[in-house]
Amino acid sequence: MDHQDFAQLLGNYGEFVGAIAVVVTLVYLTTQIRQNTNAIRSSAYASWNEAAQSWGDFVADNAKTLAIVGKKPLDQLTQEELFIAVGFATKTFSQGQAAFLHHQAGSLPDEVSDAYLRGFLNAFEVNPVLGGIWRNGMRDAYAASFVQYVEQKVPALATDHS
Image (cartoon, rainbow, N blue to C red; front, side, top):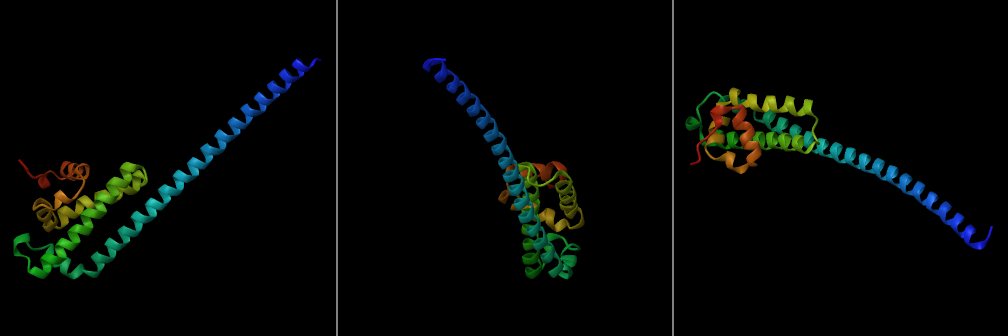
């Protein structure tokens, strides 16, 4: 075997080893990306869950007033009740939007999102003050896709902005 044939043989071995290294690197990177994606989803879910617990704490802390607020029309609320109702609405709408957007981004599983959003939409039926606050302009503070989702699911909330 002459020098040129030997160099050709070494080159072929080098290409083979290089090809194997590329495949191993791609498998490693794929695994790392999957693990990173799962970690990001888990972190996003934990963040959303913490916000949901905060919302639950707010409701528990204000349950008595919210029960009164739920029985009166929006225009008959006292200043204090209106303040609490707007706080409740802000937390409720923000948490609903968070669930909606996390689900759209893939960081909130379907079953969790569906269950939460069913409860969120039900809040409009249980507490008509929420609908009044929504229609009186608070809807404008939220993402258009979320507003469209809510108003598609609860047509009575749709407002004409023409």
